[in-house]
Length: 168
Image (tube, rainbow, N blue to C red; front, side, top):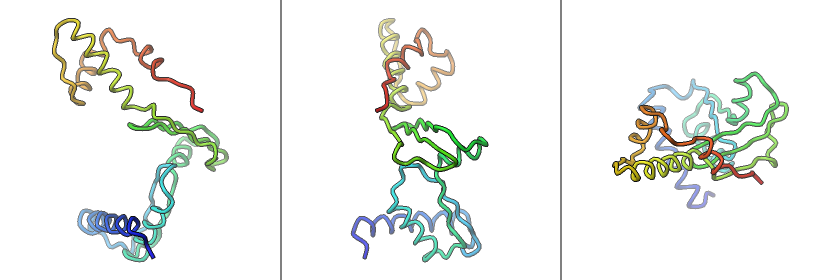
């Protein structure tokens, strides 16, 4: 029996999968092979729910789960690597040996793209406030500003050095 969390997750995933498979793609799931590329830290209980939904409810031909870091290695033509995924919220460092994830050696840090983004905003605001200019802090405005004029007087190396900490 499913607990209430798993039941709710299953209901939500069923609705999402139905919308995608039936309405958006308009395919017959019985003749479909599903390949799910998942993050290295993706919860195993959600894998199980997805697998049950796709096989039992949607009757897909088969389901294959692939880890993102392994896919990166295969795409690069290498079998052993350290894959560093810099996401918006988190950076994940995954060691791979012979196309196998060394699960116990995966490291994470909160140092990620969002922190770099907001550090640049902070520097741009300080630089422009000192000059009496107004700066919009919306994501697209900041991105456009960086694209149009570069990062101005900001020292990117300095920003990166402020953010880098040793991963334990």
